[in-house]
Amino acid sequence: MNISKTCFIFCLLSQFLGNAAASLAVTKLDFDTGQPLTNQVVRSGKIKVQVSYQPIDLNERVDDNYDINNVSYQIFYNEQIYQENSGYSAFGSGYVELRDLDNNGIDEIIVSTYSGGAHCCTSLVIYTWQKDKFIREETGFLDGSGGSFEDLDGDNNYEFVTVDNAFLYAFSSYAASFPPSKIYTFQQGKLADVTRKYPQELRKTLAAMLKAFQLAKKEKAEVNGILAGYVAQKILLGEYEEAWQFLLANYDKNSDWGLDIYGESTAIGKYPDFPTALRAFLLKNGYLGSAEKVCWWGQGVGCGVWGVGFSRF
Image 1 (cartoon, rainbow, N blue to C red):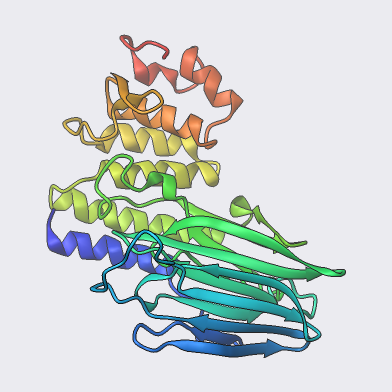
Image 2 (image 1 turned 90 degrees about the horizontal axis):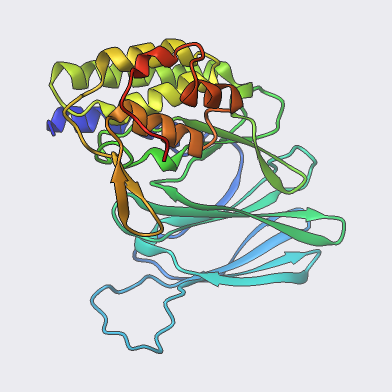
């Protein structure tokens, strides 16, 4: 992998996963790598969070009874404690932030922790006050910095902007993967997928994908991981057929990355080529619906590109 190409894709992807703009008025407490925190408080109105953090000494010997959880926090409403939790966050990467995500006048509590490891993993827990209790929502493990809360349409409701982690490593190395967008709204204490409602944001990412593809093609580097994300992004924009023809004209026929078919834990077969493997992947992950399934097994529009010689698994 050419270093300049690797850095180029990483930088393009990072701009969609970066932190929200620093100019936003928020209350936030960051975990610092070298500095412990003891009962530090962040507060907004009747919401209060008391946070303690202990940096991990990676050279310290531990036994089976060692408590790896180095972050703890207590959540109060009107000075009454309602939640008490603990977790692990590596390398000082994490924070507790108060921000009104749903424009109801009461801040949500965002707790971000980082597991450590290659490109992984950030997880966010969001608490929102409803009636007489806190509702908890989780993002699960996400790549890199996870994503960012941004007000995409200026209505004072924040969207969570991230990417579909399923595409990472699926058809190329991590550095040569370019996953499609994922955008969620936060309402009534829950994250809901609203990706297709933001075509302008999707097209910004699509343009970055094309730049990454053009550079990779020029340098004879991996392209299938970029093309997989490109096709999915175009599907989100309702432009599947156009994207598929572009893929057929440009994919790397010599790459066998992502062609294995897995059972519960082991490979049980192999797809004949990248397009076949990608379409199965898009079906599995919900990008292709019932109409495209007819095309997959029948003779609908666009199916002629498959020719003969593949079987249903």
